[in-house]
Length: 340
Ligand SMILES: Nc1ncnc2c1ncn2[C@@H]1O[C@H](COP(=O)(O)OP(=O)(O)O)[C@@H](O)[C@H]1O
Ligand SMILES: *[C@@H]1O[C@H](CO)[C@@H](O)[C@H](O)[C@H]1NC(C)=O
Ligand SMILES: *[C@@H]1O[C@H](CO)[C@@H](O)[C@H](O)[C@H]1NC(C)=O
Image 1 (cartoon, helix red, strand yellow):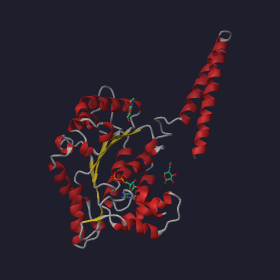
Image 2 (cartoon, protein in one colour; image 1 turned 180 degrees about the horizontal axis):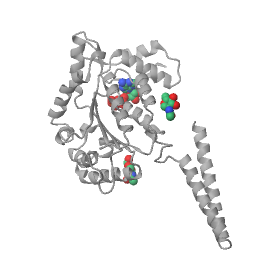
Image 3 (cartoon, protein in one colour; image 1 turned 135 degrees about the vertical axis):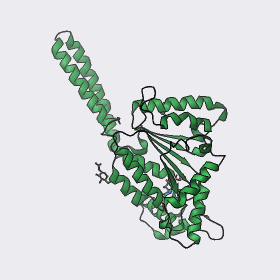
Image 4 (tube, protein in one colour; image 1 turned 30 degrees about the vertical axis):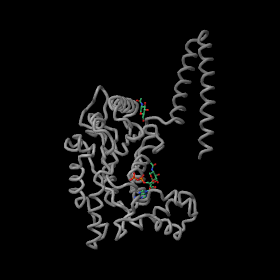
């Protein structure tokens, strides 16, 4: 795959060179035979554009086509222990992507403890929309600590972020923006993106209604854990848990957490977020599944013994019952280095 990519890039360079010579020749001929030359030049230009689009990711149906089957299959086979999130996401993304005339951009807010799959799911969504997945140049990831580290520069960040969003959506209306660590983001910065999430036909001549915004945060994670723990203590099956079991406590804790940037902004009460998606804490059996799939990714023979060892090596909470993995499936990959 890598090899093919290099070759196709090389070819692209050759073709560009060729086209340049071709066009230059066309211009020379132009002096003698205007009509033929014009035809040659415009055919050359059209051909060049086609080849360019073929090799270079463009904002068109060749590179951006939603595949609902792929998303459903990925959610079912690659995402472990998140039946509630999985259902909401499939419904939300399907509904949005099959609507030719959405009234606002899709805004998802994913909540849950660390290592439970929030970034991972964002990747699956990107894979189902863009041929290049997370590597697409239409997918943009912002991490507060990386992109907006200094509170003193908040005004710069605000205008920069607004320009980025506007510039990128102008380039391609089907752009995706992922904000990691949303709860660490300055409330002013969240406020600055609010207009883009709203029900506007156009802002400054740009329509944002086909864009996708995904917010990731730990906000509400504690209340999700509490609900999952209550279920476990009552001896109820995890899979019986439904959105309504989590919704109230989730929205209460997100609303009432005065430290969370989400609370400070009116993102929530203006209904700009279309779906709140809870991510459950992962149990031992899910960690084993993560380890097995990490082995498969490395083209190793799946070894249940090793997976079991990796999973047993993690820390679980609450201290007495040891049910949920503290770091979810994070660090599994590096643990594999150690055991294999
Ligand atoms: N529910 C899950 N199902 C499958 N893999 C998972 C899950 N949660 C985490 N992982 C694995 O752990 C890694 C880290 O998870 P990540 O999505 O970054 O967690 P979060 O964003 O919730 O902190 C992912 O790349 C993925 O390989
Ligand atoms: C959609 O995804 C499925 C499952 O990965 C695949 O078999 C199918 O070919 C894809 N369809 C298109 C149009 O790419
Ligand atoms: C698009 O966003 C990226 C950040 O992901 C930024 O570097 C780039 O300048 C933006 N493009 C435009 C045209 O604004």
